Amino acid sequence: MNCIYLLLVIFTSGVLSQIPIRMKMPDEAKMTYTQIANKYGQEAEEYDVISEGGYILKLFHIPGDRTKPILCVHGAIDSADSFIMRGNTSLSVALARDNYDVWAMNYRGNKYSRRHTKMNPDSDQEFWNFSAHEIGYYDVKAHIDFILKKTGEKSLSVIGYSEGTMAMYVLGATRPEYNDKVKILISLAPICFIRNTGLFMSLVLHMAPILNVGLQAINSEEVGGQNSTTRSLIKEVCSEKYSGYETCLLNGLFLVTGSDPSEIEPAFFPVIIGHFPAGTSRKNLNHLVQISQHRKFSNYDYGLKQNMAKYKRPTPPEYDLNKVTMKIALIVAKNDKISTIKDVEKLRKRLPNVVEYRVMKSDAFNHVDYVWGKSTHKTLFPHIFRILNKYNK
Ligand SMILES: *[C@@H]1O[C@H](CO)[C@@H](O)[C@H](O)[C@H]1NC(C)=O
Ligand SMILES: *[C@@H]1O[C@H](CO)[C@@H](O)[C@H](O)[C@H]1NC(C)=O
Ligand SMILES: *[C@@H]1O[C@H](CO)[C@@H](O)[C@H](O)[C@H]1NC(C)=O
Image (cartoon, rainbow, N blue to C red; front, side):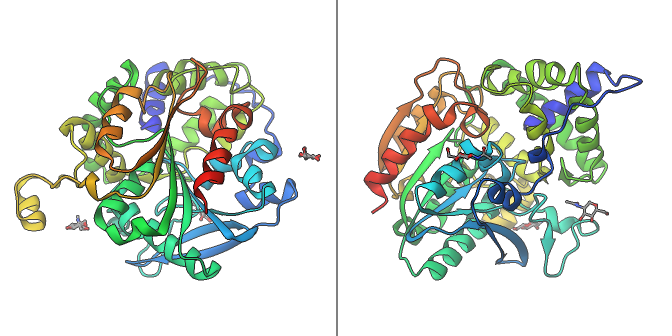
């Protein structure tokens, strides 16, 4: 979604300067999850997890106490990198230092998980036929199975961020037996109902169907991919030394997500641009838009004819949140324009087992601070550790 907005910014502002001067790129901007972990003294391993349907997904692991596995699930158009970009003060490193067994997945279609046993993402459009449904139903499930087998544990804890939380609600609703495998789901910036968003996010949601038709018309099933024109344009505009920060963050992304410039300093911004966007499918973003427009947490809407064939009904069925019986901690923020308190309050009423509900104290805390914020290790992590101490048993 953020990516769609960035696209708009780029097309409308026309700020491509003739002689761009690049920002100084910190090492972290070009490093992988594993390389950043190593830099901060954490030995990381990489696994390939094969999800049902043949998707080959990259799973990062920082080994710790095997009895305390934690799975981190990233947000839309993003990757596991967001959980480690802040290096010494990132969530991955903090969890590892506390001897948790840290696992960070990459769901299908992002830069780490753009592989398949049979299909070629560059030529097979069917590769991109997925949304939060497949991410939850197949990919997260495959990772839980993999981690429980590796550790010999019966259950694990999960930290989901943004769309990563939605994938967990899909899993709990569609495979109820997996609720018992989750000790606690910490939902950072929960996404389920996307109705009362901020002005710019609402604007993006309104424009999205037009963009969706356009992308479909040009067979552009991948959005924000590593080698895409979108991504090179974003890199071009956003890493311009004198205007990049202002154009892309202050007058760009922040309008959509909520803003706090003190939490994302100019020196750190190039690291974000180095890792984000990490790519996903048009269909994944379209599913989020549909959920917003239908005002329902429902399955993907294929249109009348295909819905009849697939669901045996004209409209897609809703996911049954009553079946999501795992313990859930919801963490929300006042300045988050995408996961708003109003929408999460609705989710809170519908989920049967919410054990914690916390509104971040700062008035400025917003959608991106959970993973990218400068002082998040001081303002958010203590809550995460407290919750894990209580429920990760
Ligand atoms: C990271 O933090 C640890 C502990 O606070 C410190 O000892 C170390 O020097 C830091 N490493 C880097 C590369 O900043
Ligand atoms: C980008 O292109 C390079 C060179 O063709 C290729 O090796 C790499 O796998 C591509 N990466 C992604 C994520 O598409
Ligand atoms: C995409 O996948 C769904 C089921 O997962 C299937 O019903 C549909 O026909 C597929 N669409 C295309 C265009 O292949």
